Length: 231
Image: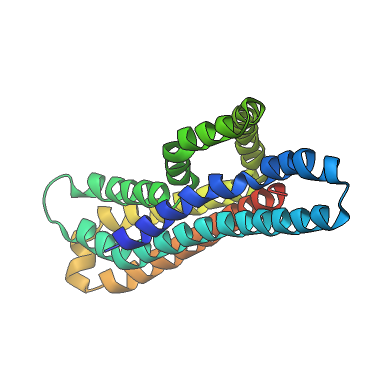
């Protein structure tokens, strides 16, 4: 069961907005404490604490995405070959047309369960709490929180542009894997009689793994870029 893993990622998503408060609280503490006391020691301590919390936020964001990627790979390793075998062993009418669609549907579900869309849902669940806490600290921080949400949407567009090339290679290999599965499905009866299904399944899985490699390359760039912007 992957429920504990998803529960852990969901819990991490709660701490992300809390750690994100380090920057505005740091600014507020500078005005409340440092500007009046003129204490260099206080400023140094506040700066060290804020830096530590911001670094922890960036690390936690990176860990969330790596965790979802690992969950997606585990789902794929556990189910992809089983689904391929099952889809191509059916002797019923229409199986030739349904097999590629079944595999494509599985890929779509796996991508959702291990991608940024799920993280966005987790973040959206905690976002109201984040805005409320920011507003309680200061109405100005509440406005800043709303601005951050808008900037996050802009960042998503930039991430799409940065990963466009790798995503294109990923889609090409996804098409090749789907095309290969269609060929196997059209000749499923012959493949079963000759006992070639395990060999063809392994060839399809090799294409499938290469497709996942390009997908990981694309998401890896997103993770590095997104984590770097947290500073």
